[in-house]
Length: 408
Image (tube, rainbow, N blue to C red; front, side, top):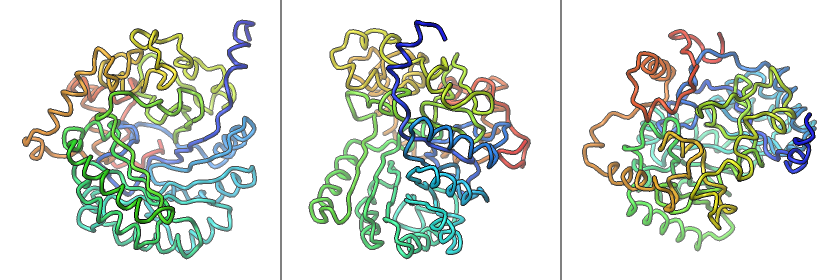
């Protein structure tokens, strides 16, 4: 290592949260999914032994929180083995799940293995809308899983992603959560990446819808106090300052994708001219501290104006690099959410465009293996619009039709 690199490495704190996206297979077809649009690319999922190696390396570095997500992590037959190893290593183990595939035997085994926490997702409070938004018949199954979570003495943590099609049902969603005995409810407005970006014009709520939903949330919060803690996460498009994305690039979070690629956030693989490394080729420690990908946007040396001289830059570190790339084509640009950005008009224009009545007639793109392959094929034929093409890795190749995702 060069002497000039030593001070930089000393200033890099270890990761605290490791997100393991153990598979991109999923029984749901959610319209807002944050999985890469080209998730059905040719790739092989990490094996059990490879995930164990990742967990050991992450824990050695100092990571304490482990999130197991997907896709649907319950589709991994070795999930209990992964959980058991993580618990032995000292992780606090979180399972982020749709609940599909959870049985009483499975939850009992996961409890024995040492699983600490389950976050269960719902799409809506009604069977009709829940099943439409996921393009599946899963609402009744989710309610059964909620009962199992309570039975096995887990904290009841519900997540519901909000958007134009369900945000007006927020009172019913909160009533459902209360009836289920939820202790924590995350009302996360859709952030427009990946499949959410493909459907942005159909999913972006109006400002009036947001204000009404926030008002109802406040009423529930005032009435229930600490009995049910509510988290209402606003969409970026109605802000004038960007978020400090992932609490800073390569600062707290490290994501390992199903095929072993390591990212500072779960959608960063779309960014051009950055070669992110795989745990199959490099250690997690080397990737975090020394890889060009993780050092690309650390600190502020990379910043352009207006970020570079902005007195607020430490608050948001320039915002989201992926959002900057999606909306401007330049990952080094200021996040257009910021009203100091020369591209802020793109946010205003998107909000106006999304409220056109014609959007109600446009078909929604569901997250399916077939659609993922078709989108890659359209890109390869030069038939994909620029905005959508920015959501894909440059070199991703579609897997064979009807093949199992994650197995080449």
